[in-house]
Image (cartoon, one colour):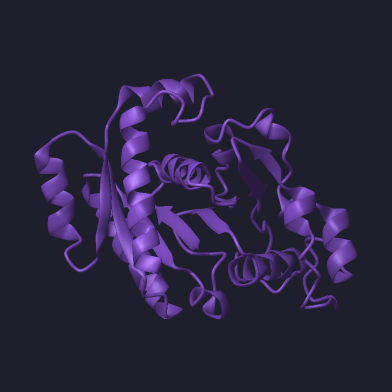
Length: 256
């Protein structure tokens, strides 16, 4: 199963990704979590030690040169458009709680759509992860779908848009849906987060009527404490763990 998680900054994309990764791992699935958000903190959310030591792939200049034939940051140079990437998940991932993690990083020159060595390497890696890997792949994305393209969209089992009760969050969700339609990615779903009242739930339902809702995560102090103490959100949040397991079950049913 291949899942991408997106939404406005701060809505809880990383929290949901970590919870789902743990839910699938507890069910016996092999899980590979991909941090594709520039504000990378998925390693912390998964309880991985020394998260700052994990280098983003886009910043590995020697690797970019080895695999593409050109240095990162180069624009206009000749380089291979189909670099080898099949060995990178095993070489560059770290593991905790039965979950392996890779950090993608971002392209700092020329924008996300630039034709440069590092973007080509990342794009080839995403294609490999979504098409060739036989495991659950969870991608924690920024507020968009930068790392996805027409060639890989069809292999995404679900693009999960995390929303919180608020107009800006809904507007971002609508923009993400528009971007997804441009690459024919139609398998969308909503997860509501930071729910305090029935009114919060009804607000989200009223503004996402045409996108199926996977579930709702309540606002909980345990997630805030976990973040402050650099602990994974599933460490002491049994209520969230149960909801995430139910969401995982529904995703399995949708994919079967």
